[in-house]
Length: 213
Length: 236
Image (tube, rainbow over all chains, first blue to last red; front, side):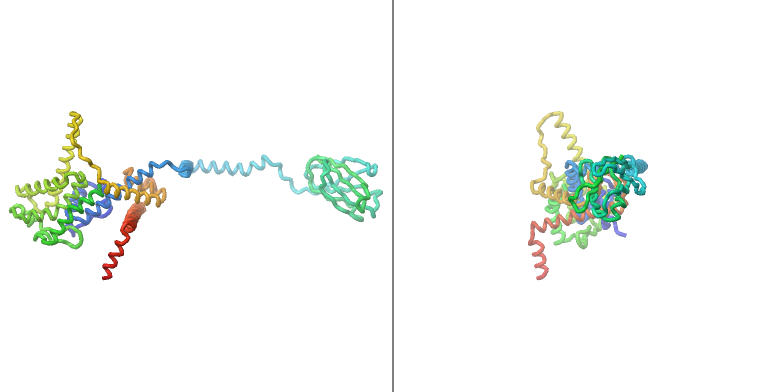
């Protein structure tokens, strides 16, 4: 077993001594060793230098103003320190908002309804004006009275809104001209469905009014 | 203080080592490297008691660096040589008076004397300060500051450590700050930061190693031929 003057202290013991945290009985043993051991004197000097430099450097760091990211991080850390039930409640609330908010704000989704057939009627030829009504948002199948329309001349069909904007234009020939036309769900407003004679430039054959409500 | 001490020790210690290596006193057997010398304490004490001048020489060879180191570390370099001299005088006189009953306790005895020297100095300083306040007299006060070169070295060490602290994570920096600056205990830090003892020790040793490594690099930058010269000598 080495004598006290031969047994070199560990780095941890030297550090504790340098920090003045070594118990008295160990201090006595260490100081006796230090009196006769140049190697450990050098080690202690290095430890002292390290501690002194670390203290000063750490102090300098503490004196620096915190960066914006550090402040954000600190705030997040403060939030994160809330107990788990608070987080669970917040998460549940958020989930509820995500699920419920669209339902509250947006119109309810309709199941795909079958197309509603609307019979467009006109009684006075090209000048005839008849406002038919249809529900908004529902697909429509519009058919018209083809009596008096020549199959050869029939026909080009156009759907325009109240401001004259063309929504749909299609040529229907032969029997298809009397079979009608499928329209997607329309929003509220007044629309005009016009049948023109073919070839183009031959004039308006019919005009039907459609009020979507 | 540590920087200051390095230099002081170098000045005071080199001549002694040369002396002992030229003519080692019989009671002192030098060991390998810079470890403690193997000393026959009984023989050494007997020589001092018998008034043998070689006894004094041996005592000085064994303890002078350590006594100087302790006093310098505690009180600074001011009047260091006088204090070392006084310490040896007290130790020798006490041995001659037969106050040291067990020669194997010589190390402990020297330590006690050195500690008393430190305590007495602090006591004197406290009284002096009180007197200064009472008298309002302009008594001479020693300048405890290090010289510019030592201050520069200390500053460089702090810069190195700042570099080390910048290179570690914020969490590691906090651990080092808590331990070294805020003087929190290892147990407290481990408990509050959820660290194991091993993690804590590893972090400290890594920081020390990095500090040492950066110090060496800086030294090599300052003396680029140093390493080369050594290697050249080794090749010859």
